[in-house]
Image (tube, rainbow, N blue to C red; front, side, top):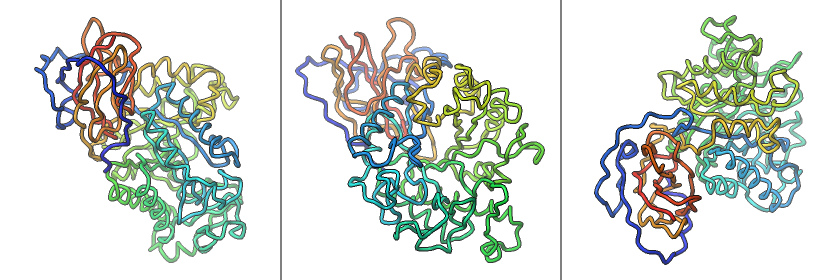
Length: 518
């Protein structure tokens, strides 16, 4: 486990020593970490605050950045590295402006790599040519820029898609599908790896572990693509693998078992390599309908369980994912797949488990004529309101970055104003370990410029503005949280009392240090 992201030392300031006080309370109970060197007398504990539901202390707020077919980034192939960097920074700035705290970046669109890899060829979406070296490794930059803005970086992999075409001959010589054509199945004009082959699973795990080992990512992410979505008149020909490995099972059960095995093996491999790295999946929004299973949702759409052999319920029960992020890309009141019905169904599924639940929001549909509801500027914000009403839902992720920037119907502005007016810390995951770093030391102010000494093990710092009147509720909710910063400094926007805490990469929080600005 890393001991902290690189932090830039604050510029030395000739200032008078500022008295600091360590504040004790619920935040201190999050971790038994040391509280710092200079302890002043403890501030008496105030009466507990009642959490203000408008400002959750912890909530995941993310955006998907799709690289396949240049959906989000880079905007087109062949841009210079500087142009690519500028585009990516603009996406992150748009996310930071709305107090988002996580990005899910597609690093393996189709058995290719957005990073320097000895296992798979360079993706064509950087240069326009499959396998062509772009002259730089983007992944360290992508990760660092996210971390600088206090955001988690989740590396998004597609496990089974081998190529958007169905000819291995057109692939780079180093492409695994060209080297192992027996691993592949042609289906619907595309090429897929056969999930029933142990060699395929081994390769996928090897690719993922390579990224986990070499890069400072915070999570490994799968989307909804497992076995391919049905195509009229097309058959997925895995008969030979089924005869060899089926062991008397029904074909559908065997296929689901293949996916479940991969999920279990990835979960173990990732956490064996780096326990703090999260692993989660964003499944299609309907597990099964009541018509197929009485325990399914009151919907009438495609079943992920039956059509693409993705059994999210099994992953919850087995504990082989840290979170689920179902894609609920239908509006409230939809006749076949009502958003509220599905949000409640998924909430009930994770209840009592250690699996966190976030919701995938269909930002890309806002302003379209897919459904009349999407022509209403408030539909997306209304869906987030449904999420907030559920104790089980810990946040949301938006598809995708392009619409985050174009902001159709100003829907994201409405979401941010209504629900994200304050930053939020990340939800804690007990199984992923971690502990609060020491509280910031040497906290001082020169006018409105706050600085402190970097804390060992700190990935970021939370800054709270203490209200001039009323209770200090910084341990209860985010009503006073003004920033999450990666560097040991902050420019206060107003004079008064502030609190600074240290956060590890999982956002375990230290005790607070008080300082007066202005």
